[in-house]
Length: 439
Image (cartoon, rainbow, N blue to C red; front, side, top):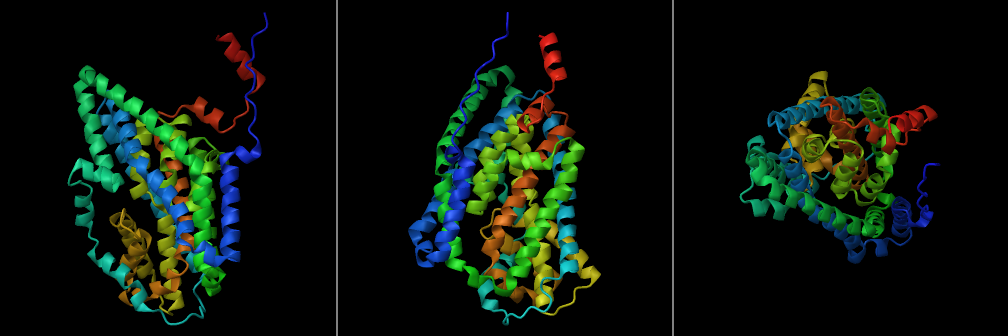
């Protein structure tokens, strides 16, 4: 008797594939913003991008809560949660240091700010960021992790506050054991419902990408670039080197190919490219990493934490921007100054997490410590910050995705069969014969 072979699902027409739609929307938005900047700057066009991001942020809290609670509640060993958390933080610090070092190295080699022919920086343009940097303290960051109320944490959408409550709630269900089974099942069912909401919301991704890109190009346009193209190009080059060399090497050690992984999350990368927000892809990334073979507890703990502690793109930006401003203002930074940049940037990148304009606030804090005279120089890069935010967000997304796979592998909870299948590993006849023999 011949084995029955299930018919292949009909392939979608290319124009119905989400990433194709998003890619076309990004291109169309850029063209519209360039040819008709007044239309691109229209508040309703801007609202397309802002509205899509708000729709995604609407479900981030419930997704983190359900994923973390469900993951922890099904664990029998409480020590495992702490072990995963420690491994994640160790990984974050090591890789973040690599990001900072590669930013400093490329900045010193290419020197994009040398001979900069810009006007004198306007200190008033960055006064608010400098003030916010002074007011941002480590103790405030730690206290801010604890919400005033559970409802308030979800209302604000603060990832770390939601994560803290989710971990505590998950431990509570773990201790309850069989008595908590009904609540665990309810949380699992809610998670399926929320992921269904995400599937609906993602249909609006092309509209959001079009609006965000049209507004960005329409508002800033080619005139905002000028002599600053060197910094933009250097930043994109450095980020690409980090992703392909540093993350690529880490991926190879963990047993997967970085290029295949990037192809696997191409929809999320394009959504982030269009919206300039890595949070816009957080729920879909968590779902895809589970399907890739990462265990639910690891996904629930590593990914949300990484959004505050594993900001590789932001780290590269801070070191490059600091060097660029110093070079543009003719300030020579000694090796001691550059070591200070490494240490301070490592701390400030965490301390301002969740603050509006966090990238610029952390830059202000870093400059203030290295050399206060450099703070007004932030005005030089203020006009192009939007063009660099896409690259920051893309690099952060890639870094968090790789970190989750690596920690799952480190914890020995990575399903290799799922990983190989999802990343397109070819199955040869030996594999098929083995599968048939073993039934």
